[in-house]
Amino acid sequence: MEFLESDVSLIAITFLTFLGARKLQTLTGLVILNPVLITIAVLILFLKLTGISYETYSQSGHMVEFWLRPAIVALGVPLYTQLRTIRQQLMPILISEFAGCVAGIVSVVAIAKALGASKEIIISLAPKSVTAPIAIDISSQLGGIPSLTAAIVVCVGLTGAILGLKVLSYGHVVNPFAKSISMGTAAHVIGTSRMAEFGEQYGAFATLGIIINGILTAILAGPIMQMMGIC
Amino acid sequence: MVKQCSIIFACLAAGEFIAWIFKIPIPGSIIGMLLLTTLLQNKVVNIESVKGISQFLVSNMGFFFVPPGVAIMLYFDIISAQWFPIVTATLLSIAIVLIVTGWVHQFVNSRKFKFRFKH
Image: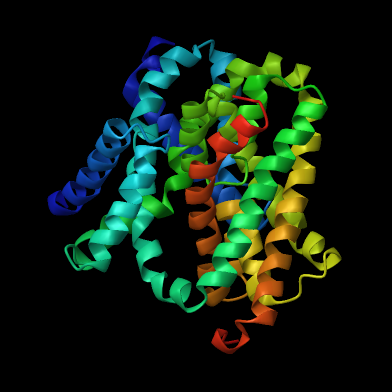
C-alpha cells in the first residue's frame, strides 16, 4: 500500500478521479453529479478504505489547493472585462448585491444560531453563497472550519442550480438579468453555469454576482457577525 | 508563462502585504484581485499578458478545491451532531438570497435606471 501514499500517486488519483467524475457528468448531463462533489466523495471513500490518513493526503493536497488563491486573483480579469456593464448599471447591481449579501449572511447566521448551532459552525456557514476559494479564505480568517465551508458551498451551488429558478418564479422575479445576478449571488459558479445555458450574456451577468458578492461578503461577514454577537 | 505567473503572484503577494500591513480583515487574495483589475484598467498590465493563465486558473477552480473539500472527513462527527441547523439555515438562506437579490435588482431597475438597461 505504501506506494499509494506517495505525493505523486495521490495527486494522480486526485486528477484521475476528477477526470472520471467530469466524464460521468458529461455523459449523464445531470447537475446533481457535480464533479467536485463526486471527486470529494470518492476520495474520502478511497482514504477510508486504504486507511491513508487525511494528514498524509493533505501533504499532496496542498499542492493542488495552493492554486486556489492565485485563482481568486485571476478573477480580476473577468471583473475587468465586465467593468463597462457594471458602470452602465452601477446602482441596480450594487444595491441588489448589497441587499443579497447582507440578507444571506444575516439569515443563515440568525437561523443557525436560533437552532443552536455552535460558533464555528455558524462562522463556517456565513460565506456559504460565495464561490469556494473566497469562502474558504473568509471562513479560515474568521475562525470557521474551511473544509466544512467548502463542502457547504458546493451543496449550496447545486441546490441553487437545481431549485433556484423555481424559487425565483415563486418570488415573482421575472427579468432574465435579475434572475442571472440572483443565481450568481446565491449559487456562485454552479448557479452561473445554469444561467449560461440560456445565453452567454446571462452567464456573464451572473459572473458579476459571484465576484461582487465575494468582495462584499469578504468585507461585511466579519462586521455583521460581530454585530450579531458571533465573533 | 513566466510573465503571466509573475503578474498573478505579484498581485497576490502585494494583496497579502496590504492586508497584513494595514491589518485589513479581508483575504489578501481579494485585495490582489482588485489590484489586478486596477492595473488592467489603468493599462499598466495588458490583458493579453494575463489572459492565458487567468483562463486556466478560473476554469479549473473546481478542481483546486477538491483537497480542502476532502478535509470534511475530519468533521463528520460535528456535522452529524448539528446537521439540522446546518441544513435548515442553508436552505432557507439560499431562497432568501435569491429572492432578495432578484427582487431588489428588478425593483431598482424598473424605477430609475430603466433607460440604461438593454434587453
